[in-house]
Length: 133
Image 1 (tube, rainbow, N blue to C red):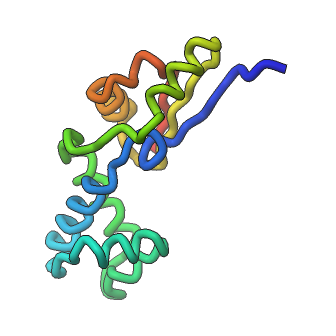
Image 2 (image 1 turned 90 degrees about the vertical axis):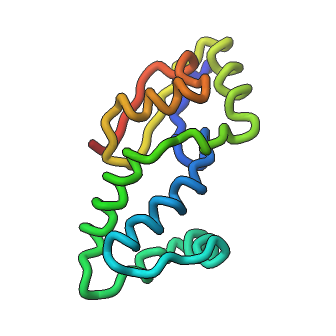
Image 3 (image 1 turned 180 degrees about the horizontal axis):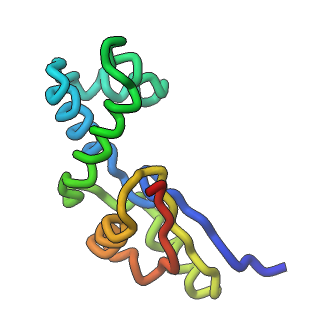
């Protein structure tokens, strides 16, 4: 049986966006009048999926993350890096005739994701993009 379709998440699977995530997380904290956090502390919380704990109870976590996502989409992706081996993998799948879909849990317009893929030279390997928008 031949593989016909491969689905990849964008962030931290095809493209390392962690530094942008960190920058935007701190911008969002500042917007809420909260202090910025250091990189190592951020990584510790990120790995444990515990960033919500940094949002004080007087703020809505959903609103905080909605604000984060709006800022995230406006932030430059020039510092993002292709995950090692991602381009080779996509190229191989393309050569094998496998359709590649990229998904993201972000509420971003599809065009923002296509922009990012184009910037990193990955767009030609991708058939379709789906977002949470």
